[in-house]
Length: 423
Ligand SMILES: NC(=O)c1ccc[n+]([C@@H]2O[C@H](COP(=O)([O-])OP(=O)(O)OC[C@H]3O[C@@H](n4cnc5c(N)ncnc54)[C@H](O)[C@@H]3O)[C@@H](O)[C@H]2O)c1
Image (tube, rainbow, N blue to C red; front, side, top):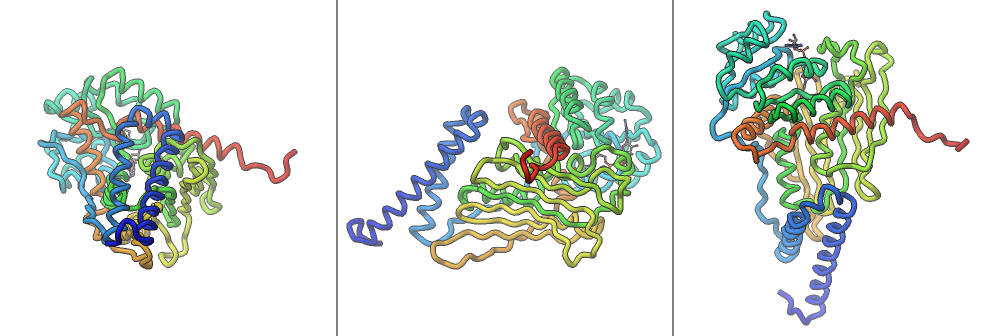
């Protein structure tokens, strides 16, 4: 190693000092941009910055990567609680029940107002009880059950008041059809002291968990660019309740990306958005959207979705990308391509190593968004039911902020763009 007094040694020391000052500057900027959220965590954030600095020093000194951990598994409850499923539709069949079977979570019973659907699903997944009414489901649910609500958003408010006070509840997204409904859901959850979370399970997709662990180990440095791009064909006719819904794309789909961006970047100052109909499905509410979340002058956060790409798989796109000062991550969401058959997920990351040319490393993904991510959201509600301190990041209070951004996106879209000529 160079002597600290040699020219190379001095340059090296100055480089480290420069990096340290950059990290400190970013840290101070973060505090001032997102003061409200971070002030109470200042100590924690200050400590958070230290591993990032140590990381850079370590990479520079040794020109080797410290061992990276790529966790793809959610935290599980010590002992799973019985689940009472309300709603036996497509998402319960394709994701909730397959996930619970995979995780070994017991499903005690199903209620759907379409009793035949509930019976079919109970047969398919060996669920012991089909309830004939919501009241009997709640009355006869085993002690300590958590309630898994998988029904259209318009039905959440009529169902919630029947749940026993203090229960653990997982509510399918979106949290109501409008911000006004989200507000009522939030109030009801507080009044009834429900430990309720919204099923924003993209946060628990294996590639998102892996990306978050790279991010939390500071492997990609300061995150300054997040992009979600989806250009696929989505057969909306599979969801009967969406055919006459006033809002479709942002409320039912891009909401996952809005929530995901918030979970990495915190609260934006605002949102610019435009959501549009497709000329081949004029009867549906808009199904193509572009959103920019405003994080100030150095963080780009955008979502672009086109669900009307009917030109085959050749140029379909479906990915999330993270770019930081030291590295980048890209994850292909195969689920949305060639829907409903899907395509394989893919993930790669690239960490800059001094003057070496950038090299992308593939990551083997264990599982997928559907159904594996649904283990994470349910596990988090079970853990919260066990321990009041173990509140999930997708609890209704947080989910409400995603709903507020969705509402703001619709407002922005209605308002239209800035005219080219100021009148
Ligand atoms: N990735 C995701 O998170 C994801 C994906 C798809 C759907 N969803 C959400 O899941 C919810 C349901 O979607 P789906 O695809 O299963 O719809 P679906 O139309 O296939 O099924 C909805 C089911 O709910 C039942 N139902 C409606 N109101 C009810 C009530 N008050 N009590 C009991 N049962 C009732 C219906 O009979 C039907 O069986 C929607 O809110 C949707 O946004 C989430």
